[in-house]
Image: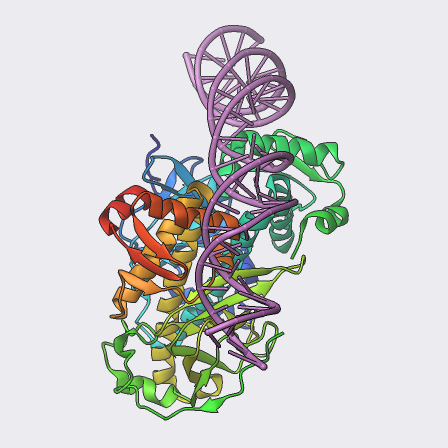
Length: 241
Length: 241
DNA sequence: CGAAGAACTTAATCCGGATCAATTTTTGCG
DNA sequence: CGCAAAAATTGATCCGGATTAAGTTCTTCG
């Protein structure tokens, strides 16, 4: 069993200097005014690989913005096995779906050494105007999430295992590109088991799907290193919607 | 092809008199003060069975609260077949997930003759305070939706077809109970095809699952009429989480 | 560096549910 | 009511992916 993150303080950094920039909390409603966010930012720290950022059922004290690295959220179901719910990249916010209950509903686990920026919940309710700004931010992020989940539900229903893996990789590639990270060739921070769990499949099937995509010339894969060879063909072939 | 609803005006009714009461817009943040909602309510009308309340891709002009009857939302995918996204009962709000784009992303179809209460979008932005009240309302409803979708995703991954139908029926029963409608014996307003589509299965499998649940004594089913015989056993057996 | 274990790949078998097909039941309407 | 169309049930077959089982390749850490 892995212990919960000991919060090592990291160097403080203003929102303006943060590499995440406009992606943080999506920022589409802010009009790029990062000043507005400042009063909400709490302390920052790093989390080691396999450490938990928070535990399922624990009371929620903050939202967490990924500054660097990556996370998964997962819940343990009645049968005792883990279900991966989401993967989080730099700029993504952990904890939004727990706001209503103020209680976490999943474990958040670092997939590699990662850096986190907190938005303590006690910052809310201080000032109505900035409150409503952050509220709209969160609303818009949640709209996106709903759309993504809908997408996933659609896929689980119609696409076969290989198509699901393909669109997982393409979506990941898109998200990396948005973040100005290498998007055609990258190293997966999550294992086959996590991917399979996220896609509601098995690790054997995930592995076979990787092989199939490589055999058909869409990607090159060597363990966790993935290169997307023919992005347009892959989209044409696998992205139905 | 079915035409879009012609908006027959219905008798106006105040929120206080509306049978939906506290369920409307979930109302947990309102503290039961239905007065607050009043300025947002637009006109009311009825929609006939199979008529569409709105079309996918059309610009969004309002939120729609179901006063009576039921709806499904569905989208047509690339292959041309329909996917049911959600079912809506009295008190449920249609259109929340389209707010960000102000454009509908699915068709909304009445499953029976139904009555609708509109919340025109132009009511927003008039008054900051009541605005933020309704905003929190919507936020809370969306949190619930995220949770429900998560639930569905979980099920699609783990539960077999019969278990999925069972928890669909139990969830429906719970929602009917919340609304003080008969919850142990009711008539499904949606067909097998819709249920199958919602559960990402086929109508044959859905039909077989109905038969299986009846054979094992959990329910009695005769076409669209369903009676839940052994609710506790059914929950024990099929609701994993 | 090298051993032990974790993670991954590949192959063989099996099963749940999709698909195809044939009735039967229900619904809507003249 | 009675007929036609739509919806639902039931049965037979087939296939994708789960399961089981090795074997191989990465990691990690003494």
